[in-house]
Amino acid sequence: MSMVPNLFKWLAIGFAALLVTFFAYQSYVLVKLCWWRDHNPGATAFMDARIKKIREAKPVASLKHLWVPYEKISDNLKRAVLVAEDDKFIDHDGFDWEGIKKALEKNERRGKVVAGGSTISQQLAKNLFLSGDRSFIRKGQEAIITVMMESVLEKERILEIYLNVIEWGDGVFGAEAAARHHFGVTAAQLSPPQAAKLAAMVPRPRFYDRNRNAPYLLKRTDIILGRMAKAQLP
Image 1 (cartoon, rainbow, N blue to C red):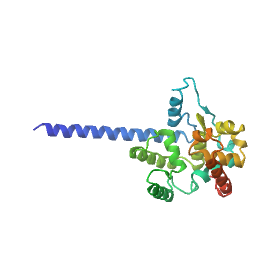
Image 2: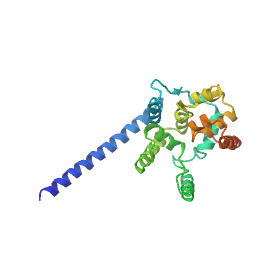
Image 3: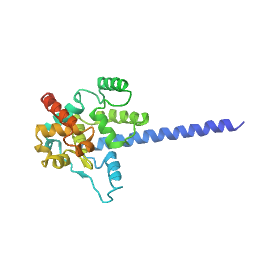
C-alpha cells in the first residue's frame, strides 16, 4: 500500500528538479544576454558544434572568425541580409507571424519542411545557445530565448551580433571572415553585388561556398540586389 504514496513522492521530486533545472537555465540565458548588451560573445553553440565536426577530419583545424563592430560592417550587407532573411526585422517583436503562417502553408503543400519562417532573432537564438535538431522542445526553447533577447537587446545590437556569428562557408563565420574569404575585402568594403551574394548564401553557406556560380544562387543574388534599396536599417 505504501508504494503508491512513495511513487507520487518521487514523481513530485523529479518534477521539482526539472522545474529548478528549467528556470536555472533560463536565468543563465538571461544573464548571458544582458552581458552581451555591451560585451561581444565568443564562440557560439553552433560554432562549437562545427569545429568539433571539422576536427574529426582535420584535428588542428580552426575557424575563420574576426569580430568587427556594427559601424565597420557595410550597410550594403546589412540591407542585403535584412531583405533576404527578415524584411520585417525593425517592426516585429522577434516573430514574423505572417511569415510563419506562409511557411507552414508552403510546407503543407510540399509535404515536407522546406521553409521555416524564422526571424533573424530566432536564428540568432538558435546559433548562440542551441543544437541543430528540429524537436518541439528545441523550438520552444528558441522561442523563450527570442523573447528574452528582444527584451534586453536593441535591434541594432541583435543585427550586429547576428552578422558577426553566422556561417558563411565551411568554418567561415561572421561578416569580416566572409568578406575576406569570398572577395578579398573587409566587411566595410563590401559592394552591393558582393553583399547580395553573401546574403543569398545564408541558407546553405557550405554548399554555396563549394558552388559559387550555382544558378539558384546567382538568381537569388539578383533578386536581393534589386530589393536592397527598400531595406530599413535599425
